[in-house]
Amino acid sequence: MRPFKNIQLIITAMFLLAAVSMVPGCSSFSTIKKTTKKIVRDLKAPDGDIKKRIGITLFNNKTFYDNQCFEEFFLTNLASTIKEACPDIRLIKPGDAGCPAVLINFPIQPTGQLDNLALAKAGKQIGLNAIVTGSLIDIKPIKEESGLLWFKGASNIVQMQIVVEVYDTETAAKLLDEIFFHEIEVNEQEFESIKSRKAEGISGFKDAFMHIADVAGEKICDTVAMQPWKGYIVSISGNRIIISSGRKSGLISGDILEVYAGEKIINGKDGQRFFVPGLKTGEIKITTVYTDRAEAVSISASDIKEGYSVRIK
Image 1 (tube, rainbow, N blue to C red):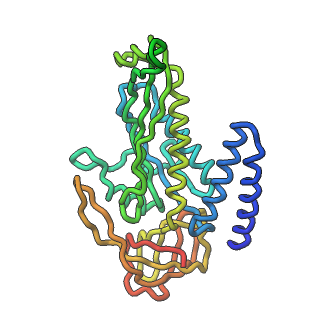
Image 2: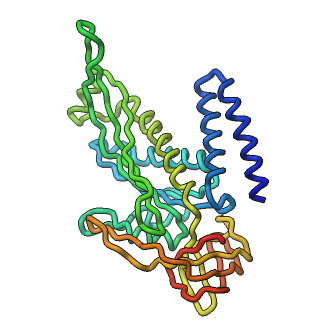
Image 3: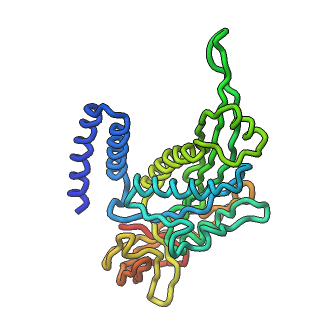
């Protein structure tokens, strides 16, 4: 099944690459480019038949525009871009039915920083492969000189800055940590209003956030798609092993999964802690599959504990 699917993707990618040079419109060119990139991403991605699942937390709004719901607007557009760029990645976010509490009230350390280890632990319990979070960090007015000699003038520029982070649930380490920028030009009145931090709304802000969401969403998709799928053991009762992924992830009865240790923790800077991936401890076999859960039995595992990761053999 996989080889046939890959052959289809290769043929389609070649056709679209040839079509790119023949299409005149910028919009059409961009659409074909994105589609081609999506196919190439699918070809490179490991575990093509298994669907990864990621969660997006609420983004912090650290700008002085804290009453415009920009964070919700950005989150909606970011999720939309990820779904379009990587339709095989399952996504859950605040506002969705059944959204887990950890994506709304994420764990914070006493220092005020995100508790990355607690976030990863919670992600494992609900079958997430990665968790996306971040902040709207600044809306900054900038006077930009333009022109030459007596033709010189000043442009009124507003720069949006959003930091996006992607955490791997297996290790609690960051897969992505990047600040995305976008600039728009405003008139003098709007510029002075932003400088005084009294502006109630500027035309073009939402377009800027949509642009950042588009670029960041593609980057998140690239980052997650290249990671191998991992599931997690969430409970053990006698011979019965429960993992936090199921039918929606593409698992079927009879699948053989490799089990890897992962209980060792190391300390990093600023109070952050990380799981250390361990060695393979054996294999388990899926016996029963539910929507987002599966039962398995050990077939060669000598050591299995809650929190261990599993991978398709």
